[in-house]
Amino acid sequence: MKNLIQDTIEKIKEQRISPEPKWKYLVKKYFLWALFAAVLILAAISFSAAYDNANNLDWDLYRFIHQSRFLYILSILPYFWIILIAIFLIAAFFEIRKTETGYRYSWSRILLIIAGGIAVFGGFISLLGFGGKLNSKLVKEVPFYSQHMMVTKESQWMQPSRGFLAGTITYVSENKIGIKDLNSDDWNINIDDNTLVKPSVNISREEMIKIIGTKTDENNFKAKEIRPWTGKGERKGSNGQGNRSSRARGN
Image (cartoon, rainbow, N blue to C red):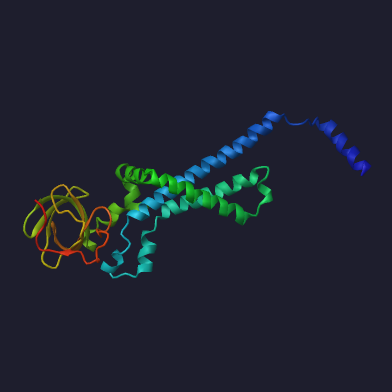
């Protein structure tokens, strides 16, 4: 033991090792925690965007394309945000492990605490509407986002060949509705007694709607079901059957 101590002392003298200044220790400590906080905030923002995206999708459309619910859900999950959240979660884990007390806790406990923090903070950000604003900005300014990276509400409802169409009403007549779709193309929507119009749909000019049906030719679409742009159109207390009407409401 005596030799070990003596050797250590000699090594310190030879290499001129001196105690690290306290300010360096504090800078390193606070930098690690600041980095952890930044990663946590980015993860929470990603969670908020993912939640908003998922919340705005219509998860029941598998019935209209004759696909299993499980496979349809897999096809529309927000993988872009899920991958980002996973990356930030792992990054936050390693940042915590680098702190002076991080070694004391098991990896499972750290991951659980971080995941809980992301969910709580991300939920709070969602309540402030940040996730929705971020998604809307990406859809408008980054076409690649909705066309290739994500299934968004817009891309989900702009598939006329599969029976899904959305847009703003331009005119209303007895058995026909005109809309300008999300790509600014004009469509004639044919309705009849079998068309299901959801209870909260307001069929009048300038209103946005979502339509399930069949594309009959280049600019004509036969409506099977009409929903409001926001939600699925069910009012509280509704029996879920909706209104069946051959006449559009409003002008």
